[in-house]
Length: 295
Image (cartoon, rainbow, N blue to C red; front, top):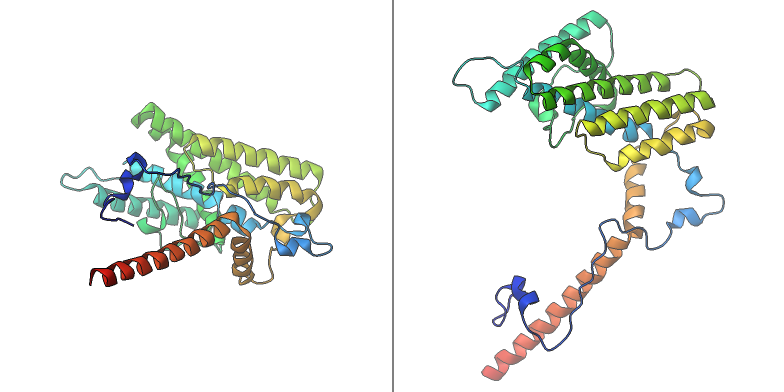
């Protein structure tokens, strides 16, 4: 809080004070202060928690890849009209309309697919620097196949008309899209059990995807690491597409509340908040006494 003697709190570290001051703050990667109470139950451990392919893959790296690829195509200006007087936003919008035309033609050639996306807008795609895809998990599969088809069809154009570094990113995205579709093929096996060969194939395919995805400047989120554990556990838990993490999606909120309550940063924030309230109370009392004396 600013005071008459220190109006700028940012200058505190450069101010001489008659005491030593040590600041403490929890690290951004601070882990649990204590074990989650659920893990203290008999027979319950980390191995009993089922990793969820819905949030770990379909709503994670797969959607980021689709967003990266589509934003790459939009930023290339290969679909933009050459008309003068159009600003960048108009060009992106018209480019998206051209890409949507290719998307519907792709659907027409496939003839049947229950996971079609009919309303593809700029707000659904985020940006290349901050990729995101606002679509359902099932719709991401169809879009992943489409971006692979789109990049393959126009790869020669990317190579001939774009700078070398941008054309190289297109190749990385194409290889990542091929690996993502191959991983979906591995997971689409009808059998619930996974052999060691299938697990090794899935892991190798995913690591190949991750390699090209990161080379294309794809953000490596915790879900990228999450998928490695999911694939490794498939050897004894089975095909991750054959089981779900929770019986009800509403359980996600309950688990999140338990995790937040056990986290070290939550504890630290509560302590700081209470100390702040105590200091404010003392300061208000001191201000009131000074006001009474002045009267």
